Image (cartoon, rainbow, N blue to C red):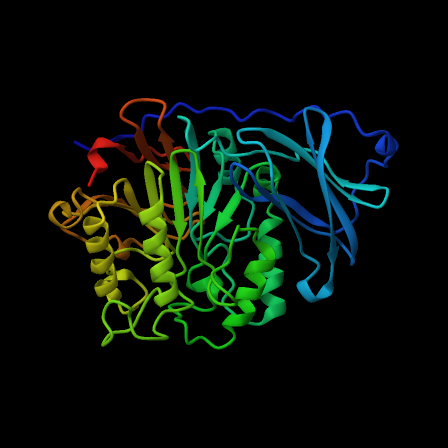
Length: 434
C-alpha cells in the first residue's frame, strides 16, 4: 500500500562550478565582463536532445549563445534582441546528446556577457533506468529567499512553477514585464536557474487578477509577457494558452493552463456547462497522457483539484464534469502512474481519492503552497480524502522518480525553508497501475 511518513530526507549536493573549457582561439582574449543591467541568463526547457536558453541584454543587438562539450565548441546560435519583445532572447539548441553536460556562454561581438555557472545537463535516455528529482512550488513574491538555494542544495534537476509566480495583478504590458523581470532577478533563484532547467505555468495573479477566467480583458498582454520571460518548449496553441509538457527520465509532467480558456466555451464533455480547459487543450491532454511512455505522469496546474469551499470559483470543484471525465478517461484507457499536483491556496495538503473503481487505482493530489510567507489556514478545509494538511509558510515539494529500482518509486516530500518537519508520500509503480 502507499504510505505517508514523516520526512526522511538525505540532502544531495549539486556539482559545483565546472572549470571553464579551453576557449577557441578566436575567443581567448575575450574580455571577462558583463554588460550592465542585463538579466539572466537561465536554462529553460531541457530534454534528451534539446535545450532552451534565455537572456535579456541591456540593449538591442545581436547576441550569440555558444555551447561547449568536454571543452570543445559544440554549437552556437545568434539571436537579435528587439524592444518589441522587451529585449528578451531565446535560443533553442537541438540535436544534443542525452545525459550530457554542456557549458554555455553568452557573447555580444567580442564581449563575454555570461559564463560563470552557465551549464546544464540534458535528460537521460527515455529507454534507460534513471533517478531524477524536480522541485515544485507556487505563490512566490520577488523578495530574496534562501528557499531557492535550498532546492539546489537538495539536488533538484529542474524547477516547476505552478503559478502566482510572481504576483502581477494587472494586464498592463509594461507592468507585467517589469514584474516578470524582477522575479527572475531574485538573487537566489537567478543563481540556481543559470544551470537548472525552469518550467512553469500560471495561476490567477500572474494571469491577470484574483479569481480571473478567460474573459479577462488584456489577457493577450499577460500571455505575451509570459512567453517572453519563460522558455518552455511550447506555449499552448497558436496565440492561445500556455500549456506545455516535458519528460525527464521516468516522469512526464503536463503543465495545464486553467485560466485562458476557463468559461469561454462549452465544455467538450458537457455542452450545457462551461469549460475549464477548452476543447483544444482537453484533446491535447488526453492524447498526451495516452501516448506517454513515462512510468509516472504528473498532471499539474495552479488551482487545486477540489473545491476551495469559499466564495471563489477558481478550482476544479467548479468544473467537476471535466475532472470526472478525465478520471473516466484514465480508467477507460488504463493509464497508469498518474499523480495530480496543485497550488494556489496558501496551505499544503495531501489527498488520496477513492478512485479504484473509476481509474483502477487511488489517485493522489499533492498541493504545495506558498513559497512566500502568507498562509490562509481557513483553506485547509476538512475533506473525506484528506490525509495531511497544514498552513505553513515557505514550502516547496521535492519529487523524485526512480526507475533504477524494481518496482519504480515516486517519492514526494513537502519541505519547509526553516527546517520544520512535514510529511512525504511514497508510491510504487505497482500501486499506480490501472
